[in-house]
Image 1 (spheres, rainbow, N blue to C red):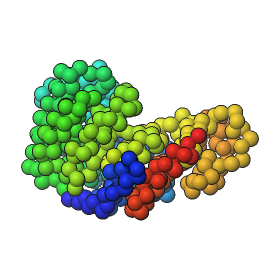
Image 2 (image 1 turned 135 degrees about the horizontal axis):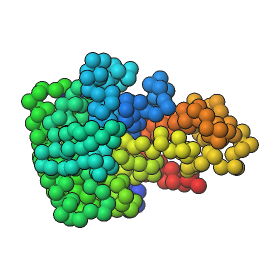
Image 3 (image 1 turned 180 degrees about the vertical axis):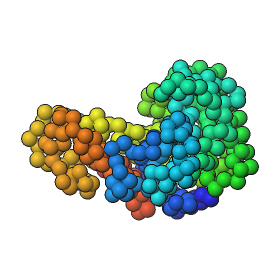
Image 4 (image 1 turned 180 degrees about the horizontal axis):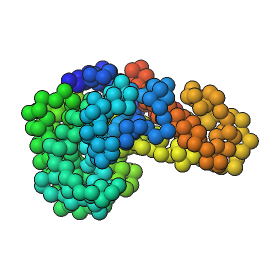
Length: 375
C-alpha cells in the first residue's frame, strides 16, 4: 500500500512572503516517488514520441495512463492478458491512471451523466458504453496502476452554482461508491479522491470536507485549468490546498506551465500532470530557463547554440537550434522526439531543482531567481 512521508515543511519567511512548499516521498509497490513531482502524460500507455529508456534518461519517476482511452483501445482483455499495464508498456516504475472523468467533460456531447454514472459513445467508433464509479475502479485494477483516481464530475468555466453543486454531489456520491468497491475487492492499488467545486470557495470547501471524510490514501484537486483566468485558478488552489490532509499526497490535475508549477509548489502541492510539455513540443514550442521559444522562428535558422545552455538533456547536449528548426520545418518525425525529450527533461529538472531548494530552505530565493531569468 502507498505510504506518504512528509520530510520537510517549508518555514521560510522573507519579509511579507512565506512559503508552504513541502518535501516528501510516496512509496508504492513499484518504487519511491520524490515530491513535489511532475508526471508525464502517457494517455494510451505511451508518452508520445518517447521510449521508456528516454523517460528514464529524463529522470521520470512516475507516468500517467488514462482509463477511458485504454479501456477503448487496446481494451481490458488485452492488458489483462499481458499481465497489466506495467508489463504491457515495459515500465517498471510507478503508474497513475486517471478515471476518465476529464474525458467525459471534454467529450460532453458524447456523454450523459446520471447519479448511476456516465453513459457515453466512443469517440472512435460510436459504440455505446457505461462507466459506473465501481467500473472505473475495476478497470484501473485490471490496468494495475499504483495510483487510481475516483470517477468525478468535472465542470468547465463558467458554470452556474446549480451546475457546480450537482457536480460536487455526484463527485462525492461516486467517490464513496468507488471507495467502498475498492475496499471490498481488497485491491493492492491505491485510490485517490478528487475535490471539485468549480470557482466558488464555498463549494470547494464543501467538496473538500466531503472527500476528506473518506479515508483515501491521497487527494487531488480537479476542475482547474478548464478555461478560467489564471489568477482565479491560483485563488481556488490557494484556498483548497490547506483544506487537504497534511500527511497525505496533494495532487492538482491537468496543470500546467512552468510558472504554474512554481506557484503551486509554493502553495503546498505535491503532484502535477499536464500534456503541455509533450504537446507543445510537437507544435515546436520549447521550454527553457529563460522562457519559451518557438523553434520554427526564422531567427534560429543559423543558430548553432542548443535550446538551453543550462540544460543537460540529450537534445541540448547534441543538437543546435538550427538543426531542430530544420527538422520541424521539414516535418521530420525526429523533430517530435528531440523536442519532447527536451521539454520533459526541462519539467522534471525544474521539479528536482525545487526539491533541492525546499531541502535547503531556499525556495523563495529559488522562486525569485526563476522569474528573474524569464525574458
